[in-house]
Image (cartoon, rainbow, N blue to C red):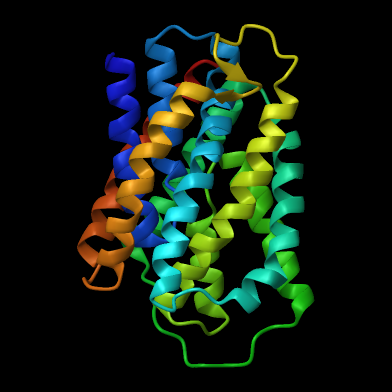
Length: 268
């Protein structure tokens, strides 16, 4: 029973972060799932990959909840989304294949570094409103989508921490950057989850109740909680200054990333 409680807690917090910051919540879900799966004595060989695959599956639901809430408030630029979507899918599929080829402990350390970098950006750098300017060519938008999809699939995240700065840089307001990033999380999560399910289908030592590297029970409980709370986060994003919460999220990632990095390096 406690396993399910931890799934719900992780999903609830990740959902708020998804709606508030335009992220998929993966940087919260992946470390928590690594800890949960380790505590329940899952095979160390599959823990990290299973956490990433499950995280990406949950982000499908989180992204739908978050993007619909942002879209109602005019926060999604669908024209930019269409230009990036194919690149996001291609990059995510490639990223799943790359992650499958990396040892679990090394992958855990890489995710820790990624969490630390994102935490530093949240703590010490702020996304400022950029003056309106012409959008970059479609090819650049596609290439940015592919790069974001590749990195996001390896880390098990929805890509908001990468997409928001890019969209802000090309001239979107912060509200539209966050809303469009939430929409971009959907193709990343769909392609990434399918990729991890496929690459893990013949993996030995997986626990019962999985499809490849996707834990079905974890997916269901985390998704149910995050679907509800993502709408709360999206509402707050359009009503409240998020600086204080952003700093708190950065501090949390600092501790989570540091722990993952030390754990991954310690067993190499």
